[in-house]
Image 1 (cartoon, helix red, strand yellow):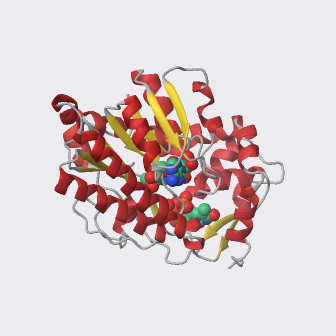
Image 2: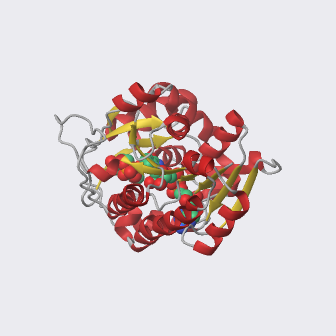
Image 3: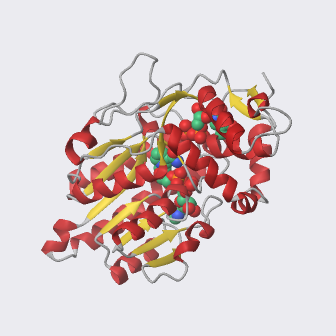
Amino acid sequence: MLLVTGGAGFIGANFVLQAIAVTGEPVVNLDKLTYAGNLRNLEALRSDARHAFVRGDVGDRALVRSLLARHRPRAIVHFAAESHVDRSIHGPGEFVQTNVVGTFCLLEEARAYWSGLPEAERRAFRFLHVSTDEVYGSLGAQDPAFTETAPYAPNSPYSASKAGSDHLVRAYHHTYGLPTLTTHCSNNYGPYQLPEKLLPLMIHNALAGKPLPVYGDGQNVRDWLYVLDHCAAIREVLARGRAGDSYHIGGRCEMKNLDVVQLLCAALDEARPRAAGPYAELIGFVADRPGHDRRYAMDITKIGRELGWQPAESFESGLRKTVRWYLEHQAWVHEVTSGAYRDWVETNYSQRDVA
Ligand code: NAD
Ligand code: TYD
């Protein structure tokens, strides 16, 4: 079985749902249920014996130790993290705590567990660490995409804390021989993403007839990947990746934010036409994010060559699926955007004068 951390969040929940559906392998899902975790995402597994949910912190070493001893997983897939750049700017402390200290605690317990396994299980064990393209910092317009040998240059508290965790994972392989794998993925989108990240926030605002707040000049570039493609890539890396290696995952889909929002508006015009006029009329430019990275792009040659993985979804098809999912899951959106979500919107957007 697998021990998954952060499996009630956006990517983790998609991974757990997909992994159980495709392989049938049982999953123990350790998640703290922060503002970003939501058991509703796992509703389809409510009475499925292959899924055991445990509410807890990856930094709780006694809990992690007991879960490892009781369930004896063949691998840990580590998604749990504070994941939102804007929140890291407003409050970096939790990012250091969960992303750096939490990962350290998990590594320590994984090492102790792995050291005590019989030889065959020891050889087969994997610690897969889910990281991001953001640890490499920002690319210039003409630079080639990041390869696995790109130097680290994190610019936000979020990316710095992810970089810190990556370095620990690397060191645990190098020093102790822990069979680690690290994946670096570009921007994900798809079902169950909280409306604090670009695409679901824009969908949510558009449907409510609210302004669509594009940061700065809207020319920042991200490389977009449909979330289930990311999850499939992680399963490939887990199955056949080389211990100690890192693998880049991306959509070969670089786009400027403004173009992304305009395509989204066109998709919404088609799916749910707005009486007052096209959704693009709601687009407005707001003050930029401090330290906003200009461009990310991933070179995915290695994972294609070594593991045969390619993204299956185009941006057009993934966007259409995503828009349909949000239109069909307005109750989910309503639930996650009540309460504390409103405080966040006030914190992040009230100080951004329209440029
Ligand atoms: P998310 O914020 O939606 O979910 C994070 C999950 O981790 C939540 O369920 C939360 O409750 C849980 N969690 C937080 N702190 C915890 C702790 N101390 N102990 C246990 N659980 C805890 O994040 P996401 O977008 O699903 O990202 C998952 C992982 O993928 C992160 O490691 C992130 O850095 C990485 N990543 C995300 C993207 C993206 O576009 N979203 C891209 C590349 C990599
Ligand atoms: P986001 O989804 O927060 O992901 P990340 O910062 O990890 O790339 O943001 C994606 C891009 O969209 C990023 O360049 C910031 C921009 N953005 C906006 O222009 N407006 C918004 O309201 C948000 C949340 C993001």
